[in-house]
Image (cartoon, rainbow, N blue to C red; front, side, top):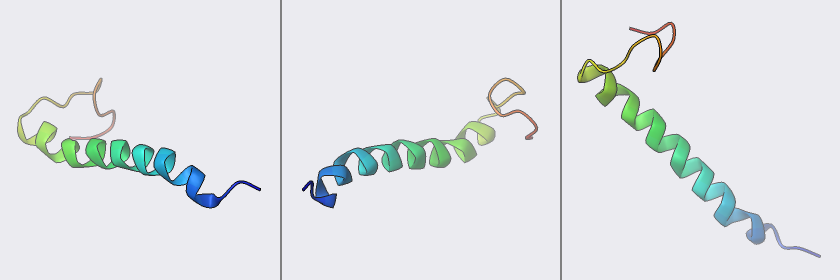
Length: 43
């Protein structure tokens, strides 16, 4: 029977990628790089 720990690395990697995207968003907006293409409906 597979252990739940077998799924932790993949989940953690996915979560890290999502957090990087979320953390990058304010910096992208601060740099004025965001547009309708990058962040639709924002700015």
